[in-house]
Amino acid sequence: MYLFRNIQPALFIARPNRFVVQCLVNGRKVRAYLPNPGRLWELLFPGTKVYLTKFPPSSERKLKSLAVAVERDGMPIMLHTHNTNTVAAYLIRHNCIPGLEGAEIVKAEHTIGRSRFDFLLRKDGKDVLLEVKSCALFNGTLAMFPDAVSARATKHLLELEELSRKGFGTTVLFVVHSPRAQYFMPEHHTDLEFCRALLQVKGRVMVKAVSVEWKQDLSLGTITRELMIPWDLVEQESHDRGSYIVVLRLPRDRRITAGGLGELKFRRGYYLYAGSAMKNLTQRLARHQRLIKNHHWHIDYLREHAEHIAGIPIRTSADIECEIAGALPGIAEWQVPGFGCSDCGCPTHLVGMAEDPFMKRPFSALLLRFRMGLLEEEFSNGALARR
Image 1 (cartoon, one colour):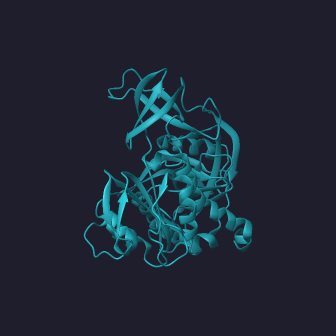
Image 2 (spheres, one colour; image 1 turned 90 degrees about the vertical axis):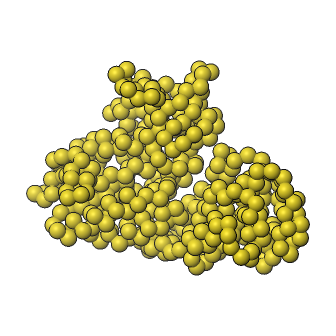
Image 3 (cartoon, helix red, strand yellow; image 1 turned 90 degrees about the horizontal axis):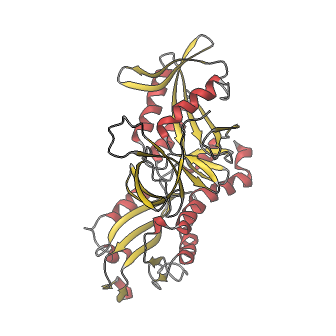
């Protein structure tokens, strides 16, 4: 199956906003529409290969190019979320979704009341509502959804649960765009509410995740695999606790008095700070974002002068703050000795770099290691045996 023709390779330069990417095509800068609102932190880096196609000549769109996929580890990863339903329909018709074998597609974009679902199916004489989600977030053998907070996805889950009480069959299907994935989990780090909603509905809503393969010409490959969902591990980690990284940007060199450390010289650039909150992690990150507060930690003094870029939660039942702090110097250009480590033996919990860390592969690799790699270790330590 082909979703697109006349594919043109390009090199990623920048992402001015969520729905636009700037690319280099044969030495010429081109702006393309990106039909994917996800963060895509682990996919879009300067120089990464992007697959473009053209809108029809009759289109009145301002942007004439469309970004449909990106290359990672030599494989195309589909980015066009709007076409995931086409993939799902193909898989259903070819009986590739366990639990939906023999299902007939009655209607796409089916509306019930104020809610619209991707498909109305008919299976064994019963109506089945199907909601499809596109997943491009993976690391090794683990895939997760969503990669950005999605209140809409949570709403869909709760609506499916309610409709199941009214006699409908209900299913949510996650299509993972990597043939290497073997396991699936809700992305509790980024969207804890979605994770909790999936746990809540799984007794009434059938939850399925399958991986697919895309070839270099963006045709659908032959590999389709049902992914295992380690529900015990999902439940274990679905709590508002863990560690975090705060990313700040200091626009110019400054001398700042940081509590007991006294006056320190801070270079302009980006700063990464490791911390933890084994209770109320969301509240702690919100505090770091605020400017007006009583100064309690070293980071409060720096935050007074620096722009808040991101607060990245790493929700886990284990306290890994010092492990993260120990890894940060390996991707940084400088450190601030003694910062944020008054109650531990670490040299520092704050490092700096001149350029945006989100445009750097080492930072992405570090996030994937702590957000997903440690979960994969749980699998090998027997979490799936307790499933």
